[in-house]
Image (cartoon, rainbow, N blue to C red; front, side):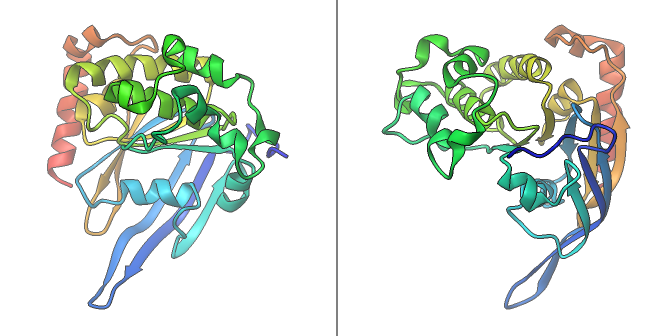
Length: 261
């Protein structure tokens, strides 16, 4: 049974979240005293230097990594409950498609394991492939697709159980610039059509500014919130917007913050 959505509460509410890893030689504080609220339907980008805990925070939200301290609410319930309801989708940098399954069969996979058939979403796997622009590639195998096409399949697969939150960990980081730009535009379209809440980790200042409604700038050693920057750009975004004074000023501000993290 899906979690009952309480839109009066934040989609994600983090209070004093800390994550500490222990090794044989030392212990590492990956996250320290992280406080954050994410609105339902928001597109939040996470930006910061390597090792600042961006990916770690996504893993905590997804219930893939326990927090060492603090309190985290995902859709007004504990992360493990939201994960059990399949209300969280995850897209990694590596599309991680099964090579012996077609694009359509890869998208269908979450419906075929772990009781996923009970969480069929509003859109069929075929409709999701059409949503991400791959209607004509349903029968193609991963080795027959480009890197951008494989990531589109990965996004469709993450949406097949109709999650309310989509976590994306540098999904376009390994792609060439032209393909990345195209997928940025397509992701914004998918976000608007689905209404899903998105947390998107990136190392690209321009990508963070172009996609996000807000940018969570994180600092390292230990990982923590440096600043949350509002993105005051029109809702309808096109790539030529990156040449406007408002966008240039925003990216300059983010760069200055990043240099002091």
